[in-house]
Length: 165
Image (cartoon, rainbow, N blue to C red; front, side, top):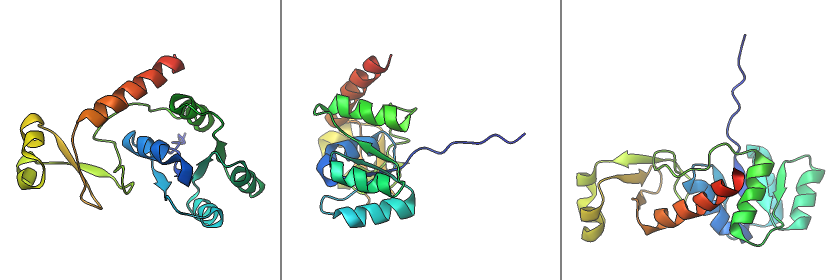
């Protein structure tokens, strides 16, 4: 008997939801995002790549649905509520912070662990001294570590997970 392994959903996040795109990426979800893309290009790209469109734009959602594309219409205003709409619609299984599965918040590429000593000259000395674990984007070479932004994201994830129980 063959088991069907469901792949993780991949997204195309509309321009007005940049914070959502960044958070999805840091949670490890492949989330395409451009701050200046028109609806037709977004739909075309999402269709070719079989991405779920996430948007507050009702017209965009209607166009996507007319074409038989999966989409998530964000109707809430508060970010935790918006995320819950995505989780419920896309049936997301993983809502946790893990540097080893996170994607680059800037370019959406995968990140990898990097030897701390190889980047000593490339990051602030205070950051270097107070952190042991670093990741680097495989594409744009952005560096990541568990700074205050991760603590804030952990609080955000905590609020979401409380609501899911």
